[in-house]
Image (cartoon, rainbow over all chains, first blue to last red; front, side, top):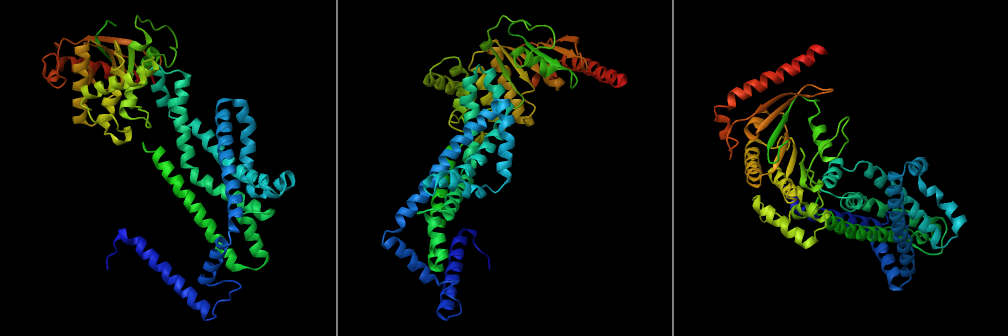
Length: 251
Length: 227
């Protein structure tokens, strides 16, 4: 039998349905311990419950604010530092080793430190998301500017463009395209930072709820939260994908 | 170099042909000596080996760039750019990005980018080398027609002796570098207007080609002996 590649999504969906049905049946036949692996229907119920009483909204809001705040700050600071380091040798000499070290370590180990410095509120989560994103964007921009196509620079100069024209027509679009092509990774980092921060110490947020579910052995809630985080990040990926496609339509 | 003349520079690799062009346009200072010209900076254009179009700008925007750098209002510059695109058989392609154009089309856009500035002199650094033979012949034909009609001077750097003879009024031979200098000068007595393909059957073509080839080979051999 030949498989039509256009219908792959149908087969994937069917496989998922079969998996869920088997999982559900095994759960009802007492083959799975609900303490570890709750059945899909119980996970679904937990998910519905989160929204039914509206208790999820403050948590979603907390995680979103932390992730998007850290993302925006991280991109802004990463771009500025990357540009300055690429232009001013002295700044590059100071920044590069710091960034290299920050890049080499798993930056989430800074989470407890941020809690001590900034408290258990929003600020420590924003800081963690920020540091994850900023290092990524810094290297994207710093190495990117060094690799700007010399031929484009010469083309603009020989057509009479001044320094400002170079920034506007060559450097800015180059930087924007590198940042955009790393946007999805940055979004993933931002949510990692926010959730891990909430995991360590918080009063709100999806990460906080996860750690609550863990401490109360509520695996149905845990699965429901994992699903929710997945859905949130995928939705933002879709938006980022459209943005990338629109802004990089020349590519 | 006289105004409106088509002059070619040929010579072995490393004789500094490209560096000479870059010095004339101000991309690098000459190692010694000076560049003297009566032309304003914006009257000299350069066509590189790569088309070097800005990938994030449409064909029309790319062509309009130089005009806008020289203070022309955006809308006027774009209209002028469109007119040049049409003159180069690119009507309807103005909104395309370089990535969505063929090699020959990109070369024409690069040409429009230079011509729109109304240059009196165009420097060409092996601009046709990357094109395949048929596209190349057509682009070269358009170039020669335009520079003859507008009386634009050209300083062409090339490895291709046939191209040099069929297009030029004069060909200069550079010796092997370093410290390369001009060793020979050949006037090309083929009348204008020229057809770059037909020129090759002109009686003056073959002897000139043989002379150039012999002199160029000698330069390369001299170098090999010295090494």
